[in-house]
Length: 278
Image (cartoon, rainbow, N blue to C red; front, side, top):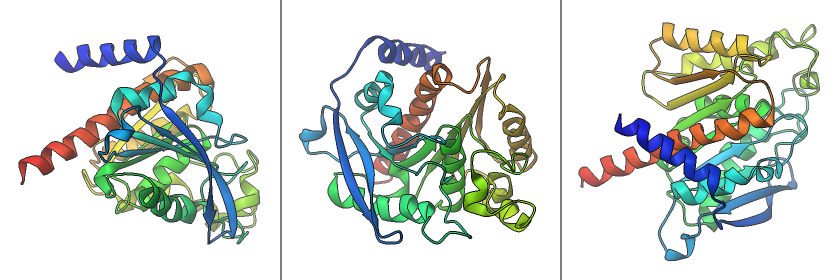
């Protein structure tokens, strides 16, 4: 009951206040792709206090860019409310956050899970360990949040998805995925290897905290329910949220608040555990 009341208070605060978080727009060099990539970093208003902060890596969807999440006022409010840093990298128009097996110039898995992490930890006061990092996103970014989280559990302690394309195989002709994986009819193995649904063997119970959120009117709803059921079958603890809603910004404006609270709780639990063990 107490947690429910706290959650309602948090949602009320985020909905009714625009907190003065500081936002940096930067270019981060990717050695693997040999180019600069734009990144937005949102800092809490208390950042100048000198303490270190956990980081929430937040990914945009297909056809979006590094600025997509900044269009929602509540995103910057969450930074101050939960006292963490949010990092929004540009994932390309249709990268799906893969290291492409057919185009060597697309290495967004390497960039986000390695190069960007290293750069952020070197340039900001972060809690530079998996217990201080979470990753999620919407649609293509929801796929990226789980795909990178499952595959890099040494880097991220928690991961999530909002309206995510968590199984790409039913959509062989959509969202330019064939540019990154090759046509499904010609490269079926790529589509099997690079879908979130076929990363579940990497999980063990509680090896990473997981939250999945998808609206009942979303065209990805079926694959999200399938993922939820498969995680249940494998005894992998996770949060699954489903409510009326479509694949649109009104839904994500609400979903991001649930995800942020989930990750803030994760960061807090890690910190409490570490403090109690010392």
